[in-house]
Length: 177
Image (cartoon, rainbow, N blue to C red; front, side, top):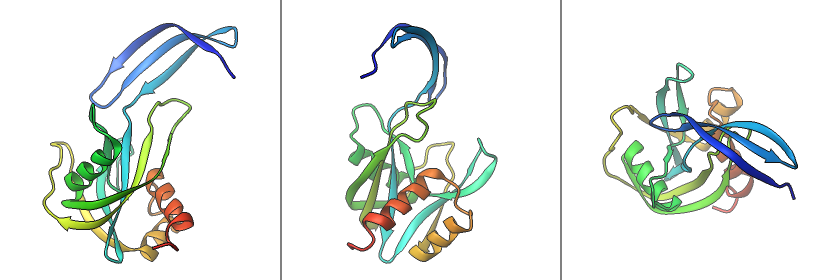
């Protein structure tokens, strides 16, 4: 097992969504500097509405593009992943899930970020209303499974969490439901 100890941890920048750290550590007897983004845990949700799936379209400033993706968001302090999935789904789509099932969790960028995403599928959706953050603008769209897969195949969906979630859904869940 690898062993490490932290000599010094410095917060270089604190933003609204994440912080950037530079740590001096000793790893396997060697001193080194490791920089990383400290990001809270998050959730992503595949919303199933009858025989269709809900994706949200939104402008993502970091890539300067409008894209389609599954709803997702950061967990609040003290919130468990399931509660967060239900809350984020309703906030971003205006649909509340009566039932969610956790599929898996993963780290999207282990080379530079601490972020962990818990992926859920949401069933038995009831229409309510959106409750977006002031800097969020989402368009709610309904797609068949084949349409989503075709969009992934044609590279029209390029969001990693959406691609990973649907591939997992296809491989391990689609035949069961």
